Image (cartoon, rainbow, N blue to C red; front, side):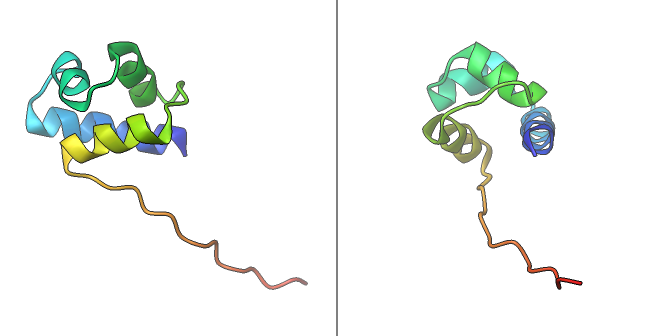
Length: 71
């Protein structure tokens, strides 16, 4: 899941044509926080992740897992 979120952040940032430094500044997070989030190696706080996604015009959706029948 971290990789998927990181890939989405990176792809959207590049689509908007902004650098990691600029995104980090706009989101109010450290460049290392952003870089590790994009790589899927970091563990940013919910506040940091929310700020990054907000700048990019993205949102995180949490939903209940679908039940699988027990066999």
